Image 1: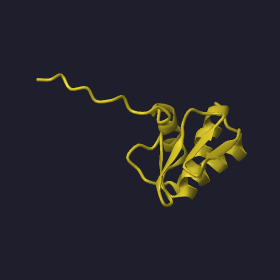
Image 2: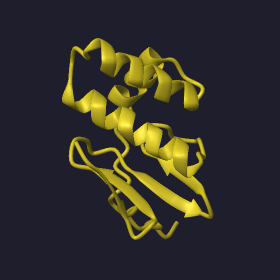
Image 3: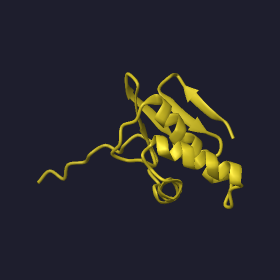
Length: 104
C-alpha cells in the first residue's frame, strides 16, 4: 500500500481508486469527502484511510486504532470514515465531459 504524490498536485494510491487533488496552496479535495476542503496533512490521512480500508475487510486491532486516530483528524469516527470510503465513488481522475447545448 503506497500513497504517491504526483507533481505536488495529486495523491494516489495503488490500493484504491480514491484520490486527493490540490486546489491551491495547502488546500486539498479528496474523492470520498465531496464538498470538503482539507489541509495536506488531512488529505494524507484521508488517503491512508482509503488505502487501509481497501486492503482489509476485517481490520486488525492496530489498524483499527490507526483508522480511528486518522478519522479524528477529519472530524469523523472510524466507522463514519469507512462508510464514506465505501459509498463514495467519485472518479476525479477523469476530466468532466464537455457541456453540450441542445440549441433550444
